[in-house]
Image 1 (tube, rainbow, N blue to C red):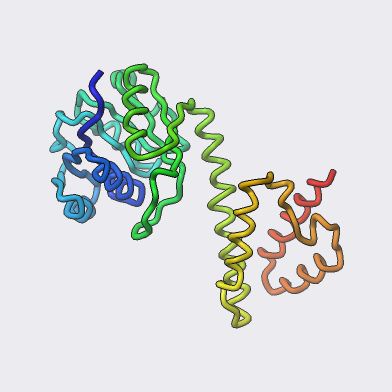
Image 2: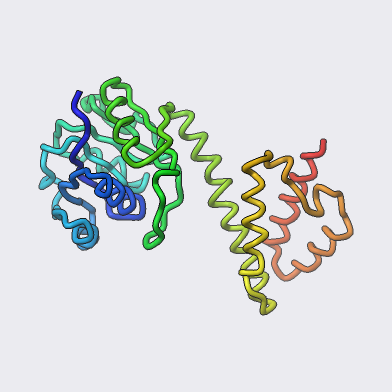
Length: 258
């Protein structure tokens, strides 16, 4: 079994940028970048000192693997346009199954890094879980070896499990970040700095290293402090959407006691 040593990156967004850099740092050969916007391909290719392909038909068929790091909505289109290649064809989506690949592609796979990515914000990939999937046992082993080059945690899970993990990640990361957005706005309206909350946020996350989220829950809702809850709701009179979120989350927290 040959290991994956060369890749073509399809995509130029956050995930593509971080993974391409991580693979290159691990000693893999990035043969080139293709993006539906050629200018974006060039930007990432210049960063990696790699080729930029203007058309998807320009992609070489000699790479060991092709990483499709594109949006879920673009994935089906890209897969349908891909030229015939011999290497492993893998996508990075948490919410799309293996069935996005037609049956003619026998070396299809998923290589899903469970992390939030922002351009310009470096990531320590050694701590990022890599979730892999393939029906081809040889490909699955190749993915394990590839993941081991950049991460300490590589785990094989099926599409159903990965979709559930992605759903949980939306709650844990995307939704919690929106709560930070609300807090930021509330403080800004009252000439207060969001930095005041950062020690609290860090401690809330740190506690999860030793206890469960349910055990870590604090605040007026878990204490049945109706007076404080009602005061907070009144303070949000000018923002019905925030009031609704506050009531909904508080009601769900109260149920943790039952």
